[in-house]
Image 1 (tube, rainbow, N blue to C red):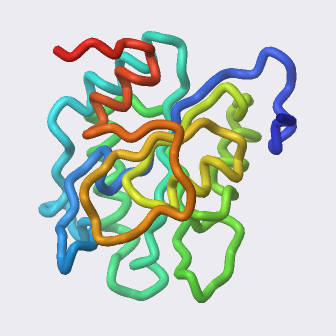
Image 2 (image 1 turned 180 degrees about the vertical axis):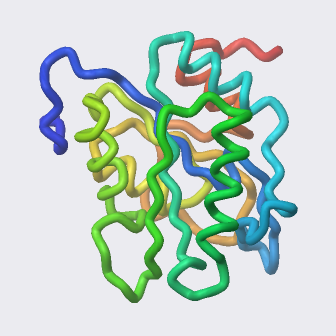
Length: 188
């Protein structure tokens, strides 16, 4: 498959991580996830820093690709988002964070399930999408990864929503996703 971002030969491989539900905890209401709105609500998943470090040690760039529609809806302040991302960067060795601030009604190219965030990140960081992975906890993440030409991993949190198409792998959490990506399928 041709790389939709037009990656040059020798481009890097990456793992794109959704933020809410993969790197940090979400609040569940009526079976659906809701991301944190304040720094006080922002709690990283245990072991996230170690899991990301393992990916980086294996030669992957690690890039966060997150939808934050509450910005467009006026419920999330940019300063709160900036504080959460400062905490994330201070504690987890990610290479970059790409944010879609739009709502579905905006019909943008960057809101997952569209692949725009991944394509932009690939261009900016010289990523070979065909050698990369998208890890997320929702159908939107799987679809974005598939549309960008990545292999996909669903972190199954048991939400009340259906997948549109199957991921390449289903994992119980970030640690299990990292093990699968690295080919380390032994349980620890």
